[in-house]
Length: 94
Image 1 (cartoon, one colour):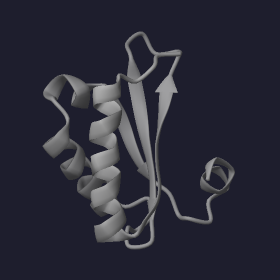
Image 2 (cartoon, helix red, strand yellow):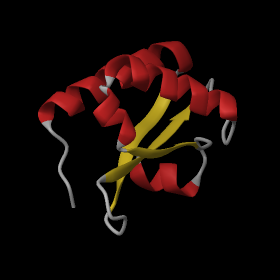
Image 3 (tube, rainbow, N blue to C red):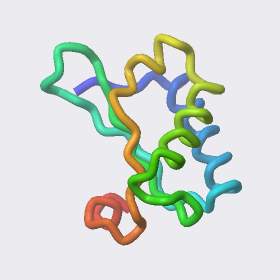
């Protein structure tokens, strides 16, 4: 498994703080793809004011990420998934 550099962690913490204030963030996390040929990550997010599974939620998170991450860091994001707060995965990870 690939570890995140401290600089990237700080950027993600900034994104999480913005989402916490604007959308009442409940969870933001990364899942690493071990089986893909390149270093790829999924962003998992859950917030009270984001519609789960929606393109609007994906666009919102992608917009925040694109303001903070470099192009090289953004390319490593395989997908963004917005889950409801009562989702089993969110409950297990929280």
